Image (cartoon, rainbow, N blue to C red):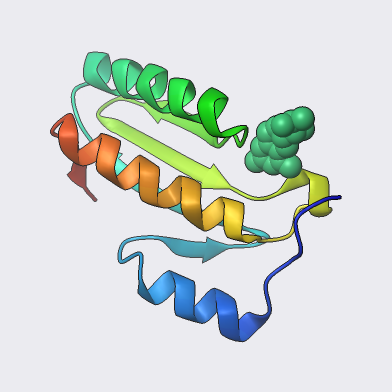
Length: 102
Ligand SMILES: C[C@H](O)[C@H](O)[C@H]1CNC2=NC(N)=NC(=O)C2=N1
């Protein structure tokens, strides 16, 4: 059973709990700054958490920037609770590894 998409009201409420994350189309996204090498490490740490929780972000890595973008593919690329749960994990991992919010 795919996760249920959130209502606009629920999305607004969950985004308020995750400062720094923004709606981008059918996903939520956030960008952090770190050295290029540390961004690569961060992608690996987030990848391990993604495997653990069974929910995976799109990751875009550029010089001194890493952007995570999350949507629920099983629900037809709509936002579900799993997206916001993963976003909270990413925030903790990014903070633990010294990434700066952009
Ligand atoms: C079986 C496996 O857990 C599912 O296919 C997971 C994998 N990771 C996923 N990641 C994301 N972002 N959306 C999904 O719907 C999704 N489904």
